[in-house]
Structure formats: C-alpha cells, structure tokens
Image 1 (tube, helix red, strand yellow):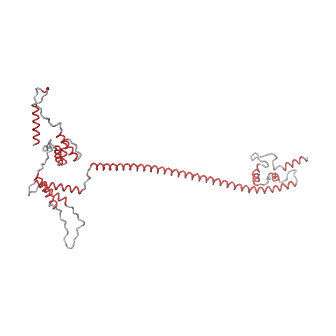
Image 2 (cartoon, rainbow, N blue to C red; image 1 turned 90 degrees about the horizontal axis):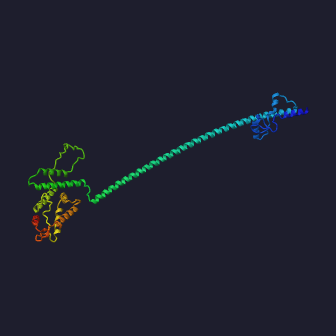
Image 3 (cartoon, one colour; image 1 turned 120 degrees about the horizontal axis):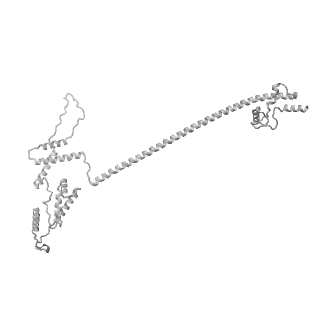
Length: 390
C-alpha cells in the first residue's frame, strides 16, 4: 500500500512535466507541454528557469489538494500557484512586448517594401531619362551629320561655280575680248556715230540747203547733250511777286561750239581725201589693180601691196574677202596674213605659170599633129595677162 501511495505521490508531483525522454513533435525540445511552448521559449530566451503552469491545474479546478499529498506539499503547490500567477503576468507583458515587436517588424517590412518600390520607381525613371537623352543625342548626331553633308555639298557647288567663272574669265582674257562698255562709253560712241553721219550728210548735200534727215540728227544730238533738270522743292511765294510758272521744255536745235568744230574738222578731212584720191563707195576685192612682177624683189613688192590693200579694208569687207578666198576668219592680223599667203601662192606657183612654146621640136608620136590650138591658147593667155597689167 505504501508503494502504491508513493507511486501516486510520484505521479502527482510529476504531473506538471512530461516524463524523461519525451520531446515535442513541433519544436523538438523536452521539458514542456504544448500549451507552455511559448513561455518555455521566452524563458529560455531571457535566461530564466522555466516553471510549467500545469502543476496547479488540478488544485485550481478542485480547490483541494490531490490524494496522497500532504499539507506541506499543498503549501508548495499554493506557492507555485502564486508564482504561476506572477508568471502569467510576466507572460502578458512578454506578449505585449512580442506584439509590439511583431508590429515593429511589420512596420519595418512595410517601410522596406515601400523603400524598395521607391528605389525601383526612381531606377525606372532614371533609365527612361537616360534612354530619352540617348535618343536625343542620336537625333542631334544625325542632324549634325546631315548638316555637314549639306554644307560640304554647297561648298562643292560654290567651288565649281567659282572655278567655272575663273575659267570663263581666263578664256575671255586669252581670246582678247573687250570688257563690257559702260553707259557713258556707249553714249560717247553714239555721239561720235551721229557726228560722222552728220558730216557725211553735209558733204553729200549742197551748200546752203538743209536736209530733213540732217535736222532730225541734229535734234537727236542736242537731246543727248542736254541734262534733265529736276525741281528740288515746291514753288513758294516771295512777297508780292506773282506765282512762279515753270516754262515748257523746248528742244534745242542749235549745235554747241564743240559739235560745230568737230563737224568742220570732219568736213575738212573728207574734202582733203576727195582732193587727193577719191575712194569708191564699194571697193573691188578682185585685186586686178595689183600686178605680180617676176623681177628681183617682185614677190616682196606684191605682198606689200596686198598687205596695204587688205589693211585698208574694214571688218565686213575683210570677212567678205576671206569668204571669197575660202579662208577662216579668226582675227584681223591672221586673216590678212592668210590672204596674202593665198594670193602670193596663186601668183607665184610654178604649176600655174605657162610654159614657153616649143613649136620647132616634134616627137615621133606627135608627127602629123598640128599645134594650132596650143598657139591659140597661149596667145589668149598672154592677151589676158596684158589686159590685167593695163
């Protein structure tokens, strides 16, 4: 019986802790029940001795000590109940601390998530900004390259135009073309032409008679010499004087002293030329009046006379002579030189000169053949040359 009571006391005292060698299936630690797991781990974390609260469960329920338990043991159980109440209060504080800890952890996690989202957003914005900047730089580079190509193309065009103009100027300079005359030069040339026409008309007409054409030319010359007068301001009344009246413009038909002097000079030159040798209105370009002599210096004399003749011609007559002789006209000097060479070759070519008559010599093949036709042709040729010399 005593053994049974001891076994009961042993079982009653050991009812708060699990038997040795038994462990919880969740945490894998022994010495606690499942309802005291949180308190066990909290005490273990704080470095305290864990006292399970299940030892007073029976006393708390019945209010009596269990069977086989003495008053000392009951006092110990009451003290353990008090300590259990204290532990429950400590557990409540621990729960509050743990709750605050979990709340703080949740807040930190939420803050971390928000911070990571903000960093991700900023990183995306930075990437978008960098990509936009890169696209802008690429567009600027493409536009700059296009502008450089356009500038290079314009430079090539300008250089080509400048080179073309320089080549044209060089060709003009080499050809010896005259520059474009100014307006004053053109007016002076027109005046000179009119003076010559007036002088020519005056020589052709009889003295004391004026032709209508000459009068018109004089009026035209007077108009060229008059300068246009312009009023610089409005007409103003001065005192009691009558209002100013601008006279009507009139054509001045009188010649100036300079024009009269020039006309007289041209008339005198023409009268001198008429007194010496009169030049026909149309020059004969056949050169029948120039003869070719066969003596010493005859060829040089013939060429000099031809040069004097062609040098006295104007441009139109010289071009007509070149057309007749089938010579290309480039400029005056070369045309005169080619014409002289052509005339000299035609006059002194031995293939064109006639051979002397050999009437007394006869060959075997020419027996019985008369040379009357040859004598006739020779006589006609010499007669033509005599007529040319005359």
